[in-house]
Image (cartoon, rainbow, N blue to C red; front, top):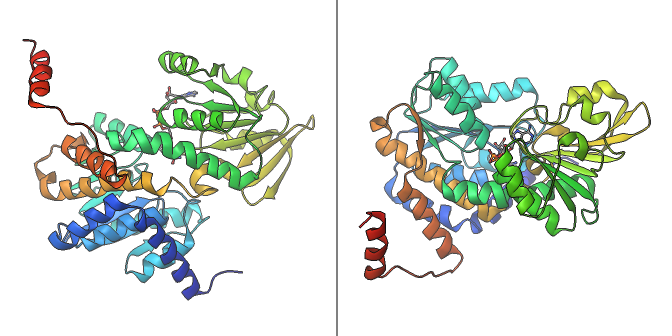
Length: 411
Ligand code: NAI
């Protein structure tokens, strides 16, 4: 039964409250924002996965005086109760789980109609739309690898007209979010979608980048035999020396009980792979766009197609083999699972909040193009993350500092 309006608000606020209670870094920033109001008079449009951790970010920005607008960065990753909670807090939120392509576009249009000073993007759809329509903002921030790849292409073509902060490549983001966040939450999505065992299965991970490393290590930890596929020779060697088997995908699919794609590339699994794939194989994607598993090929090759669980579609091939596609080939960790663990998003969204503040204070001095998160902001989040975990570390003595800097200076 669907939630009544008030029930949805209450449940959404409970989810947001739980996230905030475990986001010490962001909450510290929110308390400072509340006093200093760095975003007073500024409009911020956010296109992100609309769930509880994102709500904590939106509320921190609002506490800093911003007029905040939020829409979905993916049609399947919205938590409708969180949307109800956010609306109750005066955050203009346009998102619905399972929304149509038109609704998704409507969300992007609404974010532009708000006339933002700052854009916070995940995948660069809002930035692309803003540029296409000749809009100008002080600057934007980008959350994910695929978004940064797109921004760099726009920069190269001379199309990027403002400074875009690459949050993804900050140390305190990709080292933890992409690796441990995607590692844990991808498995959460697979468990929730299938209720099946990982132990004893042969699992193939396509792409051994930051996300792939996390997914492969967590699958191994749960008892899967893990095979990695790659296109980058160095990454392939790295996977091998980490103890994984490395194979071309065409060979790997013949043994696979589960395949997870995390490449950011298209057509990782196509017709030729489906033609020789092991019977009963589970197909999951954790890359940003739903292009890694070619679902059109899958549908064309299948003689029968039906939904067997809320997030599992069964495709039967002519010879009787079956393949199971999870979450329509969209980000499985957010579509079927709960997304990254809260403490991981605390670090990523602390960087987003500080980068947005940096754009307000210094954005007008920055040249158009992709910019790194300033080192001091990355360091600030690292220190706060240690503090949140009650961890103390050693400090260099003055003699040690002098010793190290003498080497750096080559004396
Ligand atoms: P990355 O650039 O570190 O790694 C991607 C790896 O895939 C590279 O090693 C590359 O050589 C490899 N690759 C590319 N095409 C391939 C192909 N056809 N077959 C096999 N390997 C291939 O990128 P990262 O940070 O690991 O991100 C990967 C994707 O996951 C991106 O789309 C990113 O936006 C997304 N992402 C998803 C998250 C989630 O919550 N599910 C979180 C963070 C990133």
